[in-house]
Image 1 (tube, helix red, strand yellow):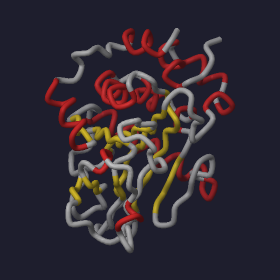
Image 2: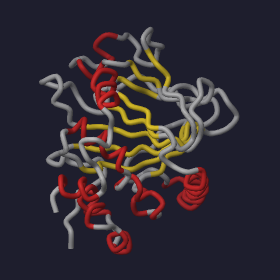
Image 3: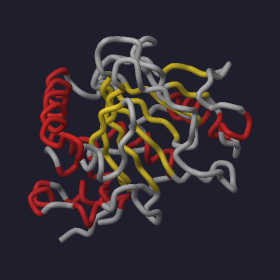
Image 4: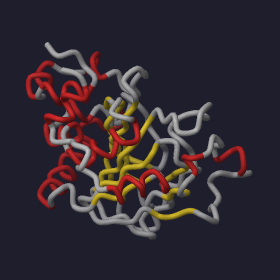
Amino acid sequence: MNISEALTSLGVTENTLTSDEKAFLDREGYLPLRGVLSGEQVEAMRNRQQELLEEEGERAGTEVHQEAGTDRLSDLINKDPLYHIVLTEPRVLAGIAYVLQNDLKLSSLNSRSALPGQGLQGLHVDWGRLDTPGDYQVCNSIWLLDDFTPENGATRIVAGTHLDTKVPSDVMANPADPHPDEVLLTGKAGDVVIFNGHLWHGGTLNRTDNPRRALHGFFTRRHQSQQLDQASHLRPITRALLSPEAKTVLGVEIK
């Protein structure tokens, strides 16, 4: 099964996103999708995330990345079938496929919780400078497990910066500083925001007393290496649970 066949089987068509949504994603570099997860799914993921953090302790996130001021988890495809929706949700996959021209696979699925008083990141991109504008190699998705507000560390983006080849450090003395054109990606728990991985973005400071939780489903083109080598990490029990379509989106050989 190739990726086009898998996407079609999962319900991704030319009309899954509207023409206005595609135009917004082209122009601004991001697209909010409201209410992708139900309240029950959000609560289950929050509970599972807390269990995993307690189980893994200091090892949490080490498969990919740890970050001061945050709780991180990695390799989530292997850690609960709850997370397999990232491989099969049609509207999210339609947005990713639109940016990457139907040439996609999951690179990693991680969680990031910005802790109280922490979470500020410098503006950055998820790829180096593009030699050719528009030749996008990566696309990300943020699955909100808490409401994203101006107070709790919502991700900021600078709309339209994916259309250039510059990165924040080219024009900012300190990419952690506010940018005059930045926009906060606010929304409700259960929303998903797709954003072009070449768009300038970064977490903001969580000024509340509670962690701000989210999943990051990061996708790349199929010829690129993954942030986490999914084939070498995939557990037999996980492989048995995944459909052929999900395995194809994951970028692993179907056995």
